[in-house]
Image (tube, rainbow, N blue to C red; front, side):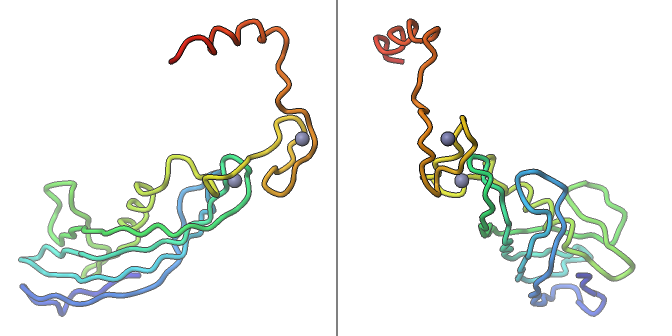
Length: 164
Ligand SMILES: [Zn+2]
Ligand SMILES: [Zn+2]
């Protein structure tokens, strides 16, 4: 995914478009292998190379409620600046190799920033039965899930009478 910008003169832009597979840090909530497509332009402004474009990442999540896999495409704009010189500010990315910039690390960072706090397969996800562990999206298991522990029952009226 290295992009050679050696021939990109000051003030000029070039179009970049590619698809690649990126490996995210390990997690229980998504699959680390993510298919990414990226397109945009790279512009050279006095040795600062700005990528400005759009990233789409197909992430396979594990629903935090029912644990099933589902795929969701995250799509977001990305603007990142690369500098050949020694970096005086950490808003910029270093070159990888003499004349190459690599979008891999910036894309990774941006995907992580755009991940949902909690992955849920659908807003109607019924989750798992907390008694038998059955996936309630598939069918009902017949467990009595609305059973209330009698030790807590006497407190219920406290919540019912008081609007929170
Ligand atoms: Zn779910
Ligand atoms: Zn059950």
